[in-house]
Image (cartoon, rainbow, N blue to C red):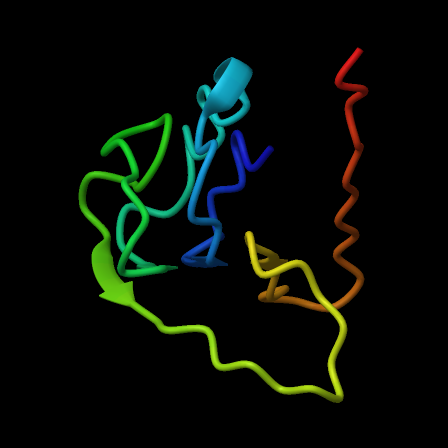
Length: 97
């Protein structure tokens, strides 16, 4: 997903299950910045390296607080922050069939 994004230095992913199921995070952070911050749910187990949390990044844990005015799937969500103008992110939902 972020393969080769050399300026990417912050990822917040609060997913708690099925991390790297079906190799979904294989090489997803290969080629990102050499230092950064990865924020995860304290109950999540992530691999370290190109398939999970970049090896040299600082790791933070974050607890999701429920806000009844927001609609989201508690199983997890991803936050993207662009480091410069005119950066486009795209997500593709893969069929489970």
